[in-house]
Amino acid sequence: QVQLVESGGGLVQPGGSLRLSCAASGSIANIYSMGWYRQAPGKQRDLVTTISSGRSIYYVDSVKGRFTISRDNAKNTVSLQMDSLKPEDTAVYFCQAHLKTERGSRGDYWGQGTQVTVSS
Image 1 (cartoon, one colour):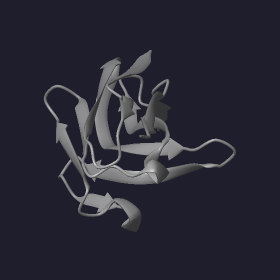
Image 2 (tube, helix red, strand yellow):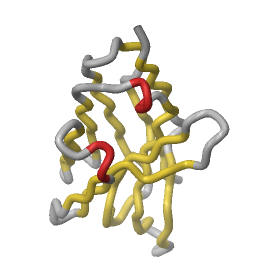
Image 3 (cartoon, helix red, strand yellow):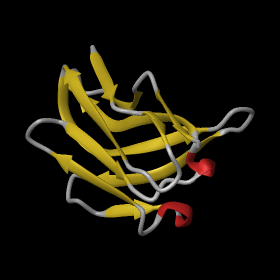
């Protein structure tokens, strides 16, 4: 069984910063990539950023220069530093991992989501 547990999030004023963290645990053989998605009210869940095991990184254009993803392969954790936050960043943020379990199955696993609200 695999679990992804997120921490961080909350309420911040425009221009402020927040840091999200996510830890994967359980019967994990290998994590290929980890990332963050977000879902605003009434909208679909969208990709924000991903990082591979080799630390190849992708950012959606709207967060480039403001968000920084990092990963600790030894601890199976991924973090998202969010700076210069804007009201349009308000959403529920989900941690995601594409991994292989010890039983050999491969797929996407998700955290429970954490609310980020940017408002004055």
